[in-house]
Length: 287
Image 1: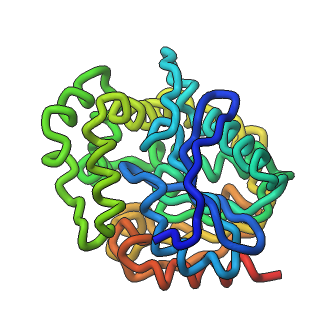
Image 2: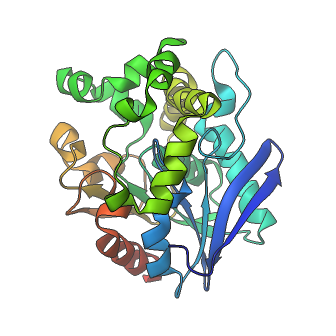
Image 3: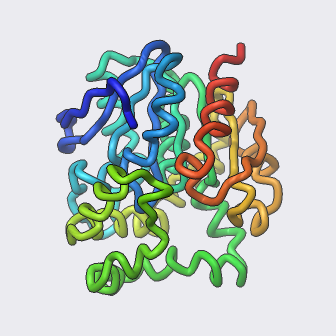
């Protein structure tokens, strides 16, 4: 995976970001989800790199990127703060404007980046994600049953203690055959780091403390994503089952949105990289 890519640690104002970058063509920033690192994009990167320049960082708080400083409202782990760091990363790599694709937790930062930096984000791809406020306002017993970790992770200290006691028991769906040995080994290494566990949990705390407030401010002000947007979701995951058609929800947040489901479980970049890569490439090449 990542054939011909460079691995670097790049300093931005808030800390160091671990990033792989390579390929040829217009630049795309790929943002992973929980609990993954940038390595989740390896198969997708190899399929897209002949056509696009790909920048694949570990999100702040994840992998081997910097750990945001704690704050009572988790503001330094907010998606707004992460968007600031990642826009700076792209500028340091010479990309003043670029495409963004985010999966799961990474989709929240991608969305925030498109909202806060419309001059930078040319097109937006959201994979298995909705704005935080949509999750919270639409939450019902099925959300609480299946996505209970959102509310557990919002509690102080206990989530870190529970996960760190046996990380492989908590993340019991990890598979080297699915992820690839290098990606699996990388993830097993970082989930045994107590600092990384804390950073990943803070990402969720920020969602329930401050991210939803940023979403509400935008909604109340009538602000929307102005660039073209593609919404994708995994058909063998539960986003559509809980919320209905995700495109209908995103139409409240974006001026130009289309989308469809992909035959995959939740970690689509690993489970069906060919279909995901094709969807991303076709959308980014549309005029």
